[in-house]
Image (cartoon, rainbow, N blue to C red; front, side, top):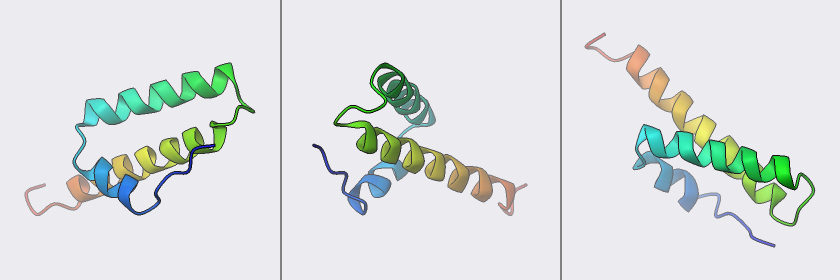
Length: 68
C-alpha cells in the first residue's frame, strides 16, 4: 500500500504545469475506473484531491490578482 506525503505532495504540485495536473487527474481517474477497490485506490483519490485543490488555488489567485 502506498502512502502519500500530505505535506510534500501538495508542495510538489505548486511547481507543476497545468497540463501536468490535468494528466495526473486523467491517469488517476483511469486507474480508479479499472480498480476502484485496488490497493492504491486511496492514494489515487488523494492525488485527485490535491490536484483539484491546486487548480482551485491557481484559479482563485488569478481571479483576485491586482492585474485582473
